[in-house]
Image 1 (tube, one colour):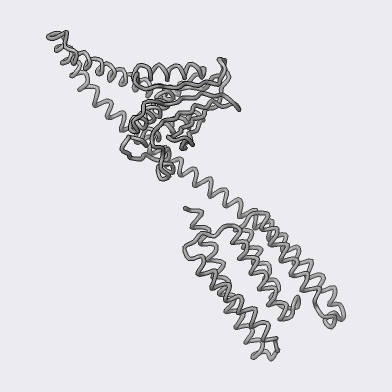
Image 2: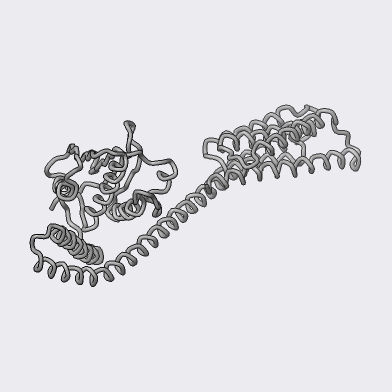
Length: 408
């Protein structure tokens, strides 16, 4: 969005400058003809300014709220060089006091266009100035004026090089710094969201510990009174899972605080994931494919496997919502990266969800968004990244990548 607004603002600035230049051009022509009694060729100047006005009006209506590409900005600047060159040609050529105005399009190109387009703009301006010098009548080349005009040409060439190189380099440096600051701010906002979610999770987990312990005592008493009741047995199993999850969360918080991490083989991580799926989702068919060696390992902390399981849980929800019971997991090691592909057989991601998932928490009927956001943050902390796409055969495809590590 910021790039869009910047391009719109740039093209409108160029159009506004050209509009102001047209007014100044008309006033100067009247001043020179009426005030200084110097007769300029009215007809060719009139046609040049008329075409300039038509081009400016057409550009104004065309770019109302519309994005201008770099090529279109380049065309606008080249048009300014052309109009200015024609006006100078019909009003004295290189002897015109305003010939140095050819440096203005170069300065604008230096802060708006790429290096290649800036170079072309500078060459066009130099060519224009050279032609204006070449087309000067011999009558003005008396005395030492020839050396004077040659000096003016060298001065214009030097000024063009300085403006193109210095202003262009400064503009690119400022642009890179702005992009770095914007990326840093975005990362800071993301980390603030992660910290806020972590604090909220810790508070809720702490509050849940007491009621879970109370329910556990009540369930144990019910089990003593009716040991054969299957409902009580199932409740005890779920309570045990809750206690294990709370214990794992506490351990995870401690490990993150201590920044505890270790190198673990990709196969071991893959086996942990499949063991969890076998225990908790026996009704889901998991198609496993591996393309890695036994010695391939990655740097792992206590948040990695839960982050991956969050993504897999989302894939299972999407698959079940589409009346299917299958997911595909593919583990691959290449180019010093471990990649895990998670494909579901659901409806896939919408374009709006693809632009938001992983960047911020997103609400959805299937619970997508929060888990993806947290998983993305966990992977980034380990130097990995997360990619969300739609599979060409249907369903969503989640690809997480982590750099391979050498085992000690």
